[in-house]
Image 1 (cartoon, rainbow, N blue to C red):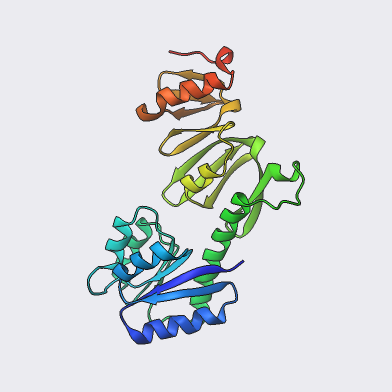
Image 2: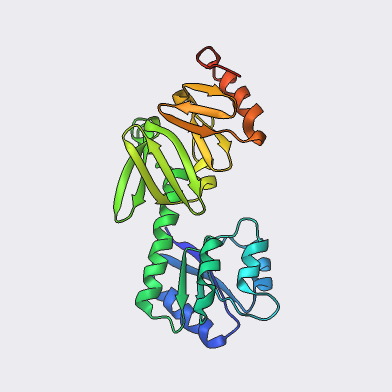
Length: 247
């Protein structure tokens, strides 16, 4: 499975060098190159792009400014000569931050990181049609250097923290590089519910609701005001009302 990528840099030599790197990586497919983010916006309207190699200081629009105005950008790897933007870049959830001149091994490491994240999302989004129903009850996430098998039925709740999530299960907790919204999109909406901008819970694991808190085992999960009515409605809809204490 190849990832469609685009290169955005106002320097011709930089675009050429990165293009050559992309051609050396079998899981990357170069859709096009752009000289500034405004061209990229037009490109995104016409093509599916999974990964962007983005310079920062460019004419017309700064690369980081572009990330601030685009609501759901593809995965981004920053390519720049300026280390001072690294913190701001990671606060905008970029996959990696490459300093020029960029060596191929460093480029490949960043690309491979994006690939693993991309495969994780697509494994969850597009399960193999040949797998049995029992086999589809789980998925894998990468925790550090190890892949962990997570059974949907074991999940108690999930907490999102910028571009990481912590999945709390009956067997322990697991942190992985993943957006909470991506995980939410691939969870069964009849079994899981968003209760806060940073929390998703398993409906079946709810033991009680009191005020603006959900009780799951010894854990208290906050319910935000915006989600409260929906949480109550969803719990009732799933016929768990007789287990819940409303207040």
